[in-house]
Image 1 (cartoon, rainbow, N blue to C red):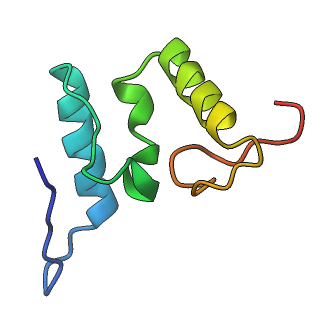
Image 2 (cartoon, one colour):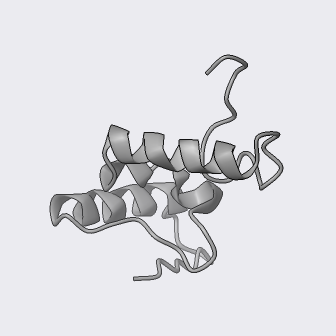
Length: 84
């Protein structure tokens, strides 16, 4: 599902709508995805459908493929501090 909200004259806040939709997806055991990647908008919802172990594997793979973190370092995960 793509969430597209036209703000126009409406007083809705996009973040509130995203939160509600993603909580619904979580309740029904859906998942967060995107055609090109998780990205900034969906990053905060990734833990709704992935376990801490799965997220750890994803981070490990990213580090293995790019030890210097050249591949959009802040798009999927928060920036890591040295030693993490």
